[in-house]
Amino acid sequence: MRRHELSDEHWELVKPLLCPPRPRKSKAGRPPRDPRVMLNGALWILATGAPWRDLPERFGPWQSVYGRYSRWRKAGVFAKIADTLQIRLDEQGLIDWELWCVDGANVRASRAAAGADKKASSATPTSRGTMRWAARGAGLDRSSMWSLTARELRWRSK
Image 1 (cartoon, helix red, strand yellow):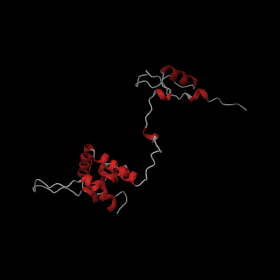
Image 2 (image 1 turned 45 degrees about the horizontal axis):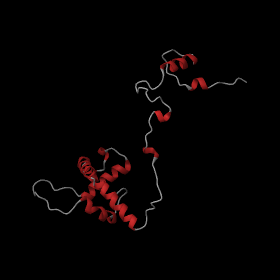
Image 3 (image 1 turned 60 degrees about the horizontal axis):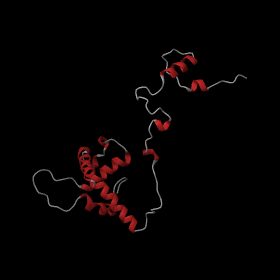
Image 4 (image 1 turned 90 degrees about the vertical axis):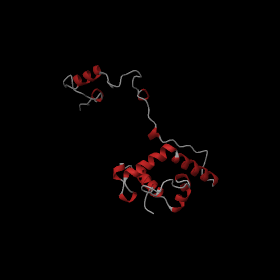
C-alpha cells in the first residue's frame, strides 16, 4: 500500500458503496477501470492538492479519474461513505458526541465584519480622499498609493 491509498481493510468498507453488484449490459467497448484505482487516484489528488493533470500514471489517465470522481460526487457517494464510516465508528464507541470542532479556515467573514462600510462598493475598497491625504502627508504625488500607517508612524527625535 502506498501513501494516500486505501488499505485492503478500508477498501472492503467502501467497496459496496462504490461498485454495487450489477451485470454489465454491453460487452462492447472498453471495460471500466478498477474503481479502487480510481478512488485511490482521487484521494491522492485531494490529499496532495495537486492539479488533476499531475496525477501519477499508475492511476490511469487523469481525465478518467476526474470523470469517475465527478460522477461519484454528484451521486452523493462520498456522503454515503462518510455516513457509513461515522455509523461504524459510533458503534465502536470511537466518536465523542460532546466534542465539536470548527475549522475557522473555511469560514469567510464579510467585509463589514472586518470594519468596512456595509454599503461600500467593491470597486473602491478605500476612500480616495484618505489615500490622497496620506500621500500628501508622506510628501508623495497625489495619485500615489500609500498605506494609512504612514500617518501613525511618528519618529521620536533623540
